[in-house]
Image 1 (tube, rainbow, N blue to C red):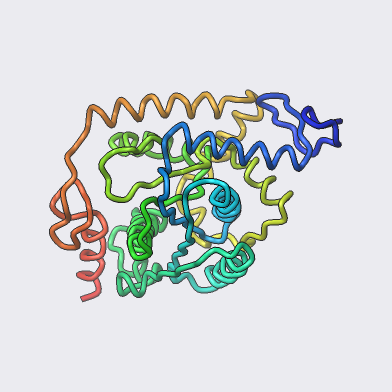
Image 2 (spheres, helix red, strand yellow):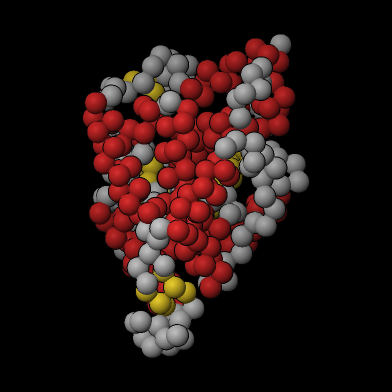
Length: 305
């Protein structure tokens, strides 16, 4: 098979479009699609500093690679931040990969730890939780988001960019629906050009996970091989497999679902809009008196005593 764009040997076929691409044309298509998503949702403004959140996985390192290329030709700057949750035997490999890749790209890296920010590691938090139904991912996600906010503000960033792809968005939508947490759906609109002092963007939100995997592979981007020991505690893996099965039988169904999610998210956001205030304990933005992070950490510390 030949590439549909340059007639070199094709290396990848997009089933949902039927397009056949060589490695170079495929990589260029991912770069252009990312740039188009950033432009469409007004994710980055002129001369802004973007904090690229890098975990050591394929998505975040591929994003860093692309954001570096874009910052060299566009009017914005990037720095990388990474979070150490304190998971023994897991995070060490990722931290080393991130440091080496940032050095290779000549991107400044700042590291922040749960221990320094919350005075406990993820393992500490899991030991202190009272309700075993509260998943590790739920606790870790809440703390990680606050750690990223802190890191971005610490380096003076205007925007946080994460490597969440289209599949991540679909899975999160289904999880929120199954848990009855419909308010969170209002936060899923890629266009978050509101009054938040620190915007969060997902430049890969319109790109399949499988395409990010191939981009990392064909561009020789190293990424962590060790899976998170807590990854199968929730239902995300089952939802991923279900959606992949649907896509295999009905090519393009993921794209259709994503477009529906964007429309639903805008409706939910507009109908459930709440004026943001400042947490009475830490001063961060929230919609109540005490933010979710402070509520969680306070609860864990009470269990400790």
